[in-house]
Image (tube, rainbow, N blue to C red):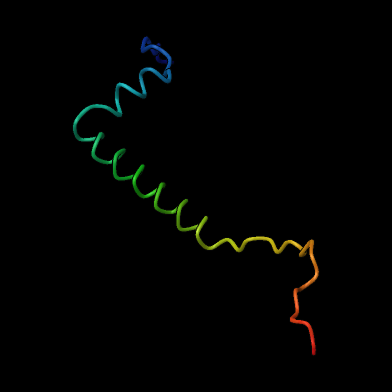
Length: 62
């Protein structure tokens, strides 16, 4: 068996890794892609139709 003396992975360690130059470009591009996909998805959603509260207005017949 091997003794793994490395510290457990933490969010702070992952953040530090993601901020180093080569990985930072990938994280940045991934974030831009995620924002674009979410906005594209939100743009394709159809609004719900709400019923009209007032009857349609018509001109009086003379």
